[in-house]
Every structure is written in C-alpha cells, then in structure tokens.
Image (cartoon, rainbow, N blue to C red; front, top):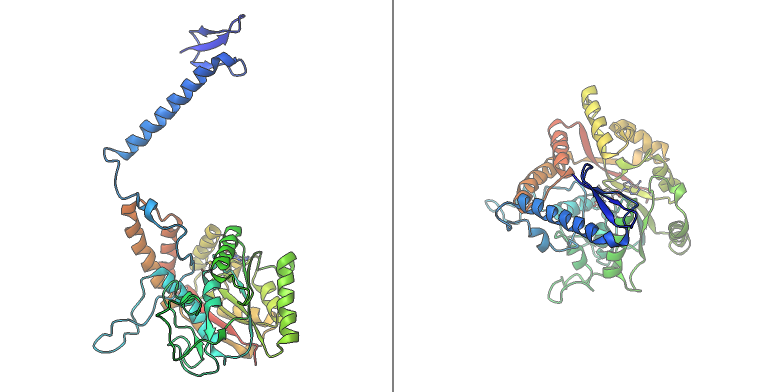
Length: 413
Ligand SMILES: C[S@@+](CC[C@H](N)C(=O)[O-])C[C@H]1O[C@@H](n2cnc3c(N)ncnc32)[C@H](O)[C@@H]1O
C-alpha cells in the first residue's frame, strides 16, 4: 500500500509503508491528474457493478418506465368505490354487483357516492360554494368544476344523479371534463339536454402537500382558465386548523362567504372531505366547528370509523397502522363518538345521515393492489408502501374492524 507525501520541492513522494491514499490538504495543483484517475476508477467500478447487476441481458421490460406517460392523466388517491353497473348485461339483466377494476374510475365513483348523497340530492338552481379539503392533486377539482346543471329540468343524467337535474354521469377518468361543453368533443354530448350552467359557482381546494397543491393549481390553470368560468383555487394549507389560514386563502374564504351572504342569500355552502379527515391532527373538531359556525356549511364526506365491537388486539394493530401512516390514532373513533363530535361542532344530531359502504370499498381496493403488485413486477416497477397498504385493506375487509362511512350533515334546510 502506498501514500504520496509532499517533499520539500513540493513534489509528492511515495511512502511505500503507508496505505494508498493522498494526504489531504497537501495536494498541489500538479497532482490533479491523480485525482482524475481516482474518479475514473470509481466510475469504472460503478459501471462494473451496474452491469453485474443487470446480468447477461441488458434489456428486459423495465424500460416500461420510459414509456409511461408523465405526468399521468389521472392522479387520484382514495380508497375507491369498486361496485358498479356492468356494461355487459348478464342474462339480459344489468348486473349490479360487478366491480370495476380501474383505479381512477373507482376513485371517481367514490366521489360520486359522496355527491349523490350530498350536493346532488338537492334541487338545482341555487348557487353553490364549495370548500374541498384534502383535495389531492386536483382530479376532483377538475371533475367538480366540470359538472353542469341541466337547467331546471328534472331529467335524470344517469344512476348517480337520478332525478336531480344534474349532469353527473361521467365515469371515465377524464370524463368529468367531457361534461363541460367547452371541453366536450364536437360529436359527443347530449343535445336533448344542453347543460345550462356550472353546478359549482365558487371552489376552494385545500391540501397539506405543497407538491399536490402546485400540481392541482397547474392542472386547473391548464383546463379551467377562462375568465367566464367560476373561480377555482387550490391552496397548500392545514385544513385541520382553520385558525392557521392566512393570506390568500383567508381572503378567498372571506370573499366566498361574504359574496354568498350579500349577493346570493339563497346559495348554499358545502364542505367536501373525500377520504382525508382521519389524517387531521390533532382532530377533525376545529374544522367541523369552523365549517358549522363560520362557513355555515353543509358537510359531505367519506371517512373512517372503528367498529363498536373492535377488540383491544384490533385496536393495538390499528394503533400500529396509524403509527406507520402518521394518522392520529385518536381519530379512529366509534360511530357514536363520531356523532358526538359532529354535535360538539354544533351540528344538529337529527340531521346527521350515515351510509356504511365498507363492503364496496376495502375488498375492492385490496384486490386491486394485489393485482397491481403482480402486474407491475415484470416491468421492474416496485409498489413499495402500497404492498403493505394491501394487507391493511384486506384486514379491514375481512374483519370489519374499520368501517367506511358516507356522511351527510345537511344545513341547507
Ligand atoms: C387519501 S388522500 C385523498 C386525496 C383526494 N381526496 C382523492 O380522493 O384523490 C388524503 C389527502 O388529504 C390530504 N391531507 C392530509 N392531511 C391534511 C391536512 N391536515 N390538511 C389538508 N389536507 C390534508 C393529503 O395531502 C391528501 O391529499
């Protein structure tokens, strides 16, 4: 092993007894080629290791990653509603138990479930303001802003909005946009029911993740930037703490509520929380109280509760899941405790409506992730944390320990 040390002339000399290294701080300019040589050797070593890893065949299927469109056309991230009506009738009947296998479609269907129970159950015509917490990457923002009223006709748009007079049929990932006439292909559309005006008159989306907020804003700007369209904004903020809302978000909320009160007294304000409130730290209560007292908003949500009969062992496991996912365990309350929370926020207990849709959610999500892990593997795509999520959804589906609820708290009466 050799060491280079500088001699009195400033030239390095070899020390044949010491390990092979350059004595740092004593490298003269002349010595740079040695440094370069070392870098080349490192690079060579890296390439050797890389090719050893690749094995004899350089090509496989992992170049799929070069072919996948970026950014993807959809960026949904909820647990999905996997039951749908089959396109192909079985023995002449429409099969109602067929499950969709498409993730964006299932995510959008979950939103449709929430809307059908909430906003779409109301007669059309009145202006609507919407505050959408946990809005993710803007898929739901685009979908919602693409929904249009069909005047005051009582004609049904489809199974989701039956009798409501709203156009809410779209099922394909991007089809929300098709419900907007400006984005609808020329030969598509239903000329018998020309859409009249947007369903949502003013939209504020909030997400905690800066990258999600930026992407959502970009997508809204791209697809929704038209001065004649209703205002739609997305902010990066902590929805669980409305006291922390400042600046532009605070201004937009104030404008939304004051415009509603002065210009449209008959309008309704809604808070939408799609698969997110169990994340809210320390609790959902500050947001719910704010929604009731300041926004005077009706609430529509998909959220999680713990089954009344969950054992201490189930709760321990759930605590572990919460620890890994970062969701506060204290948010996993029973149905009764959830109702008490809504009452503590000021909502009328007589107006609380709940639908348990667990059987349409967890099993479908677990099966989808199962398939996805297998499908992605040959292409060298790793599912990482989603593999573990599969086990959790499977557990919830089999045990019923965690329930998926549609919640409605209607303040429009
Ligand atoms: C399961 S994802 C649902 C995303 C979206 N609703 C969808 O269906 O695709 C949960 C979302 O809640 C957001 N979130 C979590 N905690 C939040 C908080 N305290 N304030 C605002 N958003 C939050 C996350 O950033 C994420 O976008």
